[in-house]
Length: 456
Image (tube, rainbow, N blue to C red; front, top):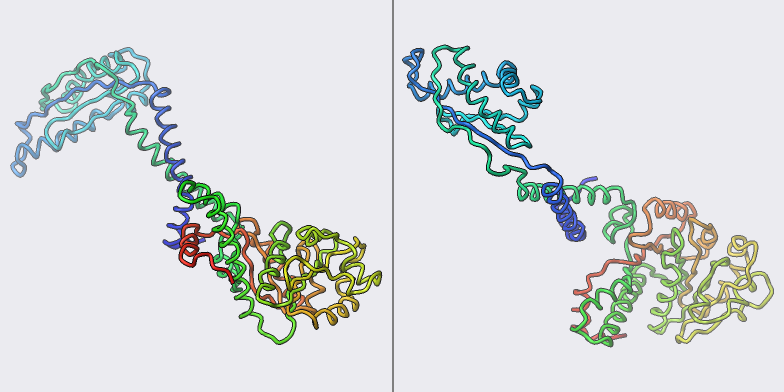
């Protein structure tokens, strides 16, 4: 998966809290480890000087350049096992050759004729003893290999007065950087492995199907509004939230008009891949919004197992659709009025054993032939297609399908499976309705202020 610069910036801003947490956690852990867990280390050093008047100096090199080259050679002499074996014998300390090499640093000082031997360990006494031993043995070893070598002592070894490490500040900064990098890695790894729908753009990019409506999470929007308490009254906040929610359905209504252009009654299936995507709530609010334009709307609860339309209007669920299709009551007896002018509903009715057969029966076709003469829109609220196939039998009676998905909840595999089922049934997929959509609260508040919360 490749990320564009815009996507990286957007994801960083979206997860900035976790990034900052990662930074401070890394700094905190590194600080605690450096300050309280790591043992202090002590360093003792000695500096030696290479004399340049060696009789082997060539006429092609001046004394300074020659001495600098000799320093490098002498440093290599001191990085041998022979040198550290002599240190072991001299000090009688319990350190292996490997430990001594790791504890010792021999380096040239600023490309001069001076080189420095430093010993760092957890004991101040040991570091001094080892460095003092190296101060004596280093010139002896070099002269034993190269008798003409001339070494002078520049800065004799001194006992460490305090610990030389660990560098708490440096380690804390490094820990913060590791925490920062780790948080970025985790965030992008989670993003790559996350198969849930992330945004409107995510839907369009993956399915090339339009998003007709974005319905915000009213609870999340409300929390964002409450966080700004003191700048608005509660009544203002409630009006703002109402405006946001209402306008999202007005936008859906307008897009639906442009998408579904036909004469006579328009029959629309509202479905979703799985439960809890907000399908029934969407059906009801869409019906209410359309009815406010003067159109007559009928919502039919086609979820004959767990329909919820009746509960929104505080109406008994029977008699309803299943009773009418079974011939137990007349069609006109199951149509219920609602408090909204122009909006009627048909509830699910008595629980039946064969809902799929009823929805695809001739009785269902006869019912639609009767009611479509009285209504401008018929909305079928159907069960989740990946759970039950009941809605597929309604495809032949409908003009199009609205697929309700939930941002951050509905997964791409589930959505793809649902779309495949409707395509196989030759359903006309009009577009998506994105529930729980992330909406810029500040931007919409500005719109509300500008337009004054005007209604139709």
